[in-house]
Length: 273
Image 1 (cartoon, rainbow, N blue to C red):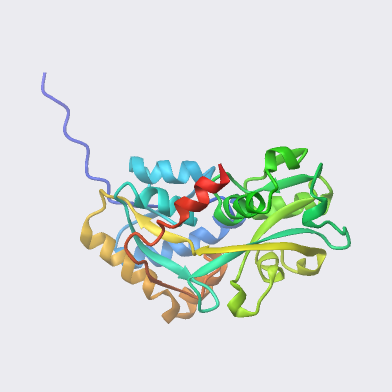
Image 2 (tube, rainbow, N blue to C red):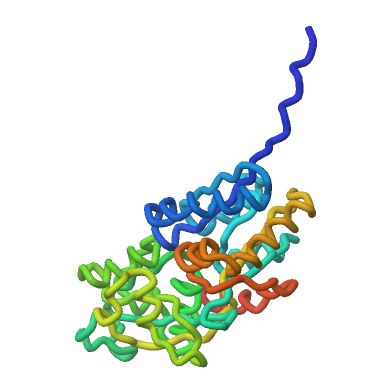
């Protein structure tokens, strides 16, 4: 009995997205992105939304995704395992961002009044939605496990902010531009919940971290990775690309990611444990 013929080589390219914008919104915008990248790579592109940040990293490392749009800590994790980050987002002319701890407008909640309150985080691997604010709180003497009566992981920034608005949480965190831009937490809120910037008020800002990036799997051929890198770096040169940058990546353009540019985040990760 002869052996079955070998399976044909996979011709599609799989790109993974994080759940941070919410599955429905991400899936709606992914279709336009896949069409754009298909033309650049000359092959079919499949775009999927991971169930969590951990799943996003595992998909890339296991070869179930060829490249992903990843939050900074995921970039740091896979980079440490030999994965190359091709490009990182630029927002407001900056390649870094910070997190803001926010509450409902008029609540009067401050750092000194957090004891016994409820918080809605995004994901344990979300830098802006968990790691940065937890590291900040610990530095200020607030151990989250002892401070909050409950900590929920909402899965996306949208869900975390909505938990605050609905009253099921007292505090959440949101990514926002660095201080040097002159912009505030409301700018981050508006990206996720349009028209709701004034529905929240600031508790505190954290330190800054590198922006999200696009790591590529180690099994991806160098020439294919090069095509993807050129496509990402050239997105801002067309109207279609500019719309994708704004709607899917919340960025104005991509820039080449420096080698091992996310190493500093391990300090943040350790501080949040």
